[in-house]
Image (cartoon, rainbow, N blue to C red; front, side, top):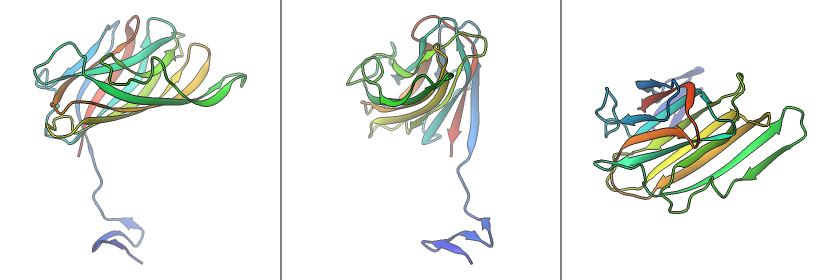
Length: 204
């Protein structure tokens, strides 16, 4: 029996027949005691324009030089500098310690959510520097080249915290500007990114 939606066959005889979105790898940057990693449209093969309506950054084993540090990002509008676009955001996380002595789901305020602020947005916090500790995650940016709408973003990640707990972090918000964004920068709030990589994909 086929599953049909709006005259389009979605599933027929157990096979999915609708084309799904695909990812196109645009650029990979690798940290090596790096203070920042920056993706700028037109530089070194980076694409951040209307070619795609959605872009995704993938973070793989970002390992900081400073214990208990935050992984953050910001953007620049076309022709601007300073990485100080206005952001309103929200953040919550679930965590559990290795010895089960603390676990919770909690909204995070303070340095984590922004209200019409121009600082760097925290994606996750308390990343540890032990040799087996790092942070991984994905950040989706929606239609950054639009000159009509605000620019929304969603992040989901996991980190090994400095106090030996696993944290699943959820951060979302928007850049409160109708100007096109074409540059994104990532950094720890203190120290460097010793190792790890960031991949930029176009989502079609």
